[in-house]
Image (cartoon, rainbow, N blue to C red):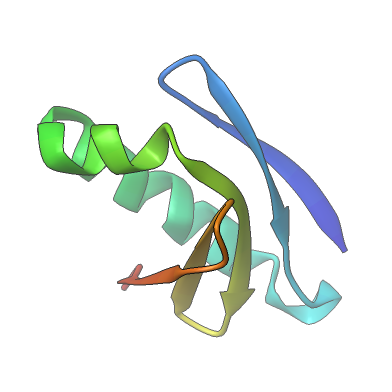
Length: 72
């Protein structure tokens, strides 16, 4: 399934299996924690999409590189 998440005026699609809906809430909470992390906010501007695999968010950049973020 796919949902759109908004963080700092930027919307990004999030792909996740249908049985892992609870991890979307964990991702939102983690993004709220990272709100004042300016290094992460600079990285977020380049994110193309997010894939949720259990409790790990795989942030994909437009150039193909990935950033792994644990959401627990």
